[in-house]
Every structure is written in C-alpha cells, then in structure tokens.
Length: 296
Image (cartoon, rainbow, N blue to C red; front, side, top):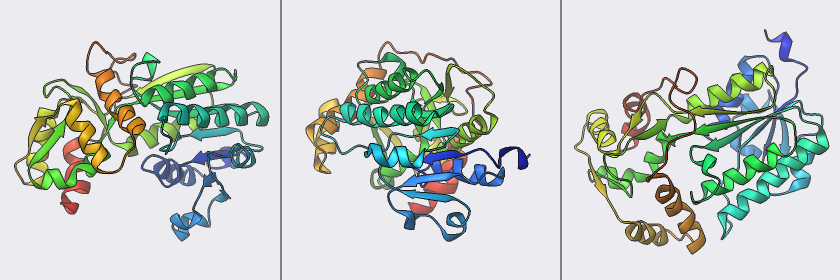
C-alpha cells in the first residue's frame, strides 16, 4: 500500500491546524512524504518535520502557493483565517491563488475544506467566501472535491470562560439542530480522498459528524462530560456583535461571523442529507471528555 503512493506529490496547506495536522499524520502513515506549505516551520514537531518536505510561505502570496505546488499531483486546500476587513473578499483572493496553482501547475485533484452553507452562494456571512473559493476551483476544470463540513467541536474551546460559569451562549434557536463534527474526522475523510485519487469531476461530500445537535442538547451533553451544570442561552445578534467587538474584531469581520449564523438558521437545509457517506464517528461527549474537560 505504501509503495503505491511514494511517487505521488501531495501538498497540504494549514498543516498544523485541527484538520490539516490529522491529514499529515495519515499521509505519513500511508507511506507518503507530503509537501507542507506553512508560514512557521517551527510549529511542526521534530518527528514530523524530518518526514515531510517544507515550503515556507504564505497562502496570501500567489508565488508561495505556486512554488509549493510545483509538480504536485494532489492538493489539500484550506482557506486560513483572513485578517481582511471584508472576509469574503479575503477568501476570494485565497481561492484565486489556489485556482491559479491548479491551472498553472496542472494539479489533477484538489480537496477543499469548505462548509455547510457554501451551497447558498450568498447570504451566509463569511461562508460566502468559501463559496467563492469553490467557484474558483470549479472554474479550473480540474478534479475538485468540496468537503462541506458541519460546526466544529473545537469551536467550544473558544467558549471556555463562559463554560466555566455554566453558560453556553449562541445566536441560534436553542432547539434547532445542525451537524456538529470533530475536525479530526474531517481530516480522515480528506486524507482518504487524497490517497484514493480515483475520482473525477466536481464532487461535493458533506461531513456531518455522528448526529445533528441543538444547543440545548449540546448543553446537556457537556454537563455530563464536563461534570458541571451547563445551560444554553440564546443571545441576540446585537449581543453577539458586542461580544465580538470586545475582543478587537473589525466591523467587517464581525458581520462575517454574525452573518454565518443568521444565514443558516432560517429556511436552510444542507444540500446533502445525512447518510453513511456523510456521517463520521466521533461523538461530542467523547471529544468533550478528552479535550475540553482537561482545560476547564
């Protein structure tokens, strides 16, 4: 199995992130020596660093992307967080860099980390930027797979202060269920598709996690997993704007985040339904006990 992949050049972006790090680990275990594009090589542990090829650069810079993907057969592309005042425009520029690399370097297969909601194309806040990247990659005519992922478990880590006080705040209706997923499971799906390389055309694969969850249900699960009483509390969009502004986000960045929840909480159903192809195994209870409980 390892020998079949040794001559395949696979490039991974955001290789130290929640998803990208899992992709890298699985590629290594499959016998691939991946090429990693990242700004700070020191973020890699020494054991990984000696088993990969590194290109130091920024995905914001087209030349860095072109250099990292020269000779590539397959690409795992993630739009990293953008500091742009207009995050949709920032994602569009990142997507343009990826698409240029696919065209100029003849990359046959690209797996893109997108999001549930990108199928709307408009009206989903910052997710609209991921839709722009989808469209840019589609226009290359190469083989492209868009992973439409649910709400990351790891987003809860950003609520640690509030959770210590027993409160889980959200602008979502408390009883409205949506897909929740462990980013490691997304990495496993991405790695499997990168290694397979036997698919063609434009494809979409949702990654919905093990079950749809409402915030009320999430609070119940966290109460048991964390050993403390957690209640879900709905806040208004204005309250969310104020909270985001208090941590220094710009108006455009705030509207991008508020727009994500506003655009998906009414009259929206993911393009792909839950099935054996879109369901992943890691439960929120197990993840929270292993990763959230130790830091609270």
